[in-house]
Amino acid sequence: MAISRATVTVVLSALACVAALFASGCRKAVEPQSAIAIEYGISPQPVRVGPVAITVKLRDAAGEPVPGARVNLEADMSHPGMAPVFGEVREVTPGRYQGSLEFAMPGDWVILIHVTLPDGRKLERQVSVPGVTAN
Amino acid sequence: MQVPGLRRLFHWRHLRTVLQIPLLIVSVAMILDGLLGPSLAPKNLATTLSWVHFRGTLVLVLLCAGNFFCLACPFMLVRNVARRFFNPRLNWPQRLRNKWLSVGLFALILFCYEDFSLWSSPWWTAWLIVGYFLAVLVVDGLFKHASFCKFVCPIGQFNFVASTISPLEVKVRDLDVCDSCGTKDCIRGRRAPGAELVVIQRGCELALFQPLKVGNMDCTFCLDCVHACPHDNIGILSRLPASELMVDPRRSGIGRFSQRKDLAAMAIVFSFGALLNAFGMVSPVYVLESWLAEILHVNSKAPVLGVLFALFLVLEPAVLLGLAAWLTQIWGGSRRALVPLAVRYTYGLVPLGFGMWLAHYSFHFLTGLYTLVPVIQSALARVGWTLFGSPRWTLLGIPIRYVQPLEIGFLVLGLAGSLLVIHQLAESDCAERPLRAFVPWAAVSVVLWLAAMWMMFQPMDMRGTFLAG
Image (cartoon, rainbow over all chains, first blue to last red; front, side, top):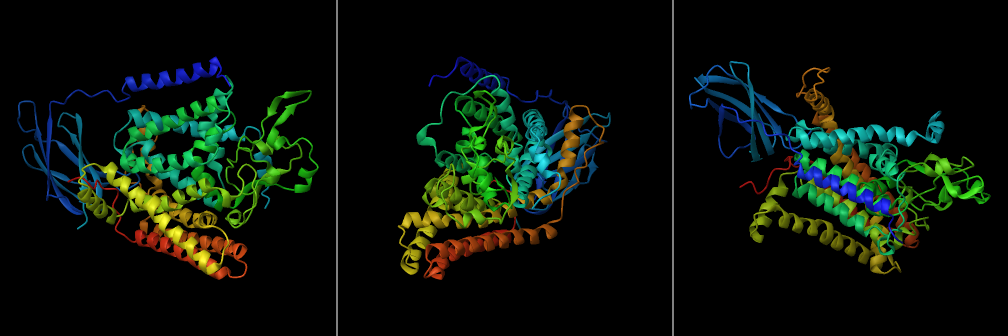
């Protein structure tokens, strides 16, 4: 049985919409690069369930340390619906911050480093920690 | 069972649309948040709602009531709107009038879930929902009736199989009324007076003729038959859960279960897939996957998963069910050939499979019940609506120590259901030696149940990346 022109039109329109959506990328616009670099370190390696030490270094565009920032740590599992963990961070030397997190379960984790600069600007860095293993 | 007010509610013509609209709005919000929102799954509506709340609610509603998700399916709302503007002219191809395509799609979705880590990707989850809407529009745009629901939709097939365990069913109140009915509107649709070609209320689009319909298989609870029946003789009625698996009459729109290899294959993917899907989230799977990757000399996930799926969805069922069928033949004295015997008893594993899906999905749902609150708060805040304050990411759900006994209860219930169904099948199949026919299939059920219980007590590993290096 022949397919009606209306059917073809609708199907083709739907496909065109999808193509347009794909072409547009459907992604959030990339935010402009911050002038502040957030470096991090996690120990011990490889990462296992239990406490880990997190070191965060903040540097400005000139490579100078950024002191006086407020840094918070949050870790989520890659699977939704699981308990996030939070960590306290304190500044140990100017621009160098240290804290800890406790991974409660094996699996893929993502650490969010939330930074509030002394001038009130907020930055965030997402760090993937795949394959945290059981002790 | 009669609940006051429900009969009137189910007869309300706009009930389905009223249920579908909120789900459509939620689906659109999930798509937008999945594509444009945070990339971290626990903070995104698409992943949290899909993989925690939707799946959990779905299995609990199927357990406690029936296939009400298909009733409220938002994809069908879009399809119904689209069909106001164009009418499909084609009939679904004869060769595809079975469940083989949907069996493949169901297994493919389980495979993609693992391979693309769908649970952790809002972007892929959003595209999965978009893909669903498009597939519905294309299939039901080209083909008449509810071709997508009956022959394609993997969620629908899951619901059809699971709803065989449900306590509610759309069925005829009094068969004598049907015998005297001259119009058969429940299947033909109600026609406009004096205009035989004008359908004012469609009948069952899934070819289920109510007087001959048995059970929930292929029933979307769309209530078209309820609205079409001129005698108010069809309703949502209570019944013994899983009773439809214990009998093998000729069913309208389906035929006999024992003659449907495709349906049995769906029951296999449903039951063994439940275990495989749960196996993917316990620590031992990574040892097995790493070992397979090593002996296969591969660094990517897909070939390893391919081997695992072939092992657990094809080889394992073939060996276990083949062995049980052979033992039933020689011990029980069944006159059926090996394959028809295996097909007949495979449906007995459905309650156990459903118990495993229930245990798994309700675990995520109950332990992450309140995580929806901060995710919604966060999504609203992103569009500038901060009425509900800052997201409370510490909100979780019911503690694991309370949920775990419930999970064990679901598995025990599943095993009990399977044993009951198998016993009934054995009694009607081998009236002289039912116990001998029962034992091999009961043994298969117990083996699968032990595997499920073993998984339940394994250290949970929230789907770590086994090839992380």
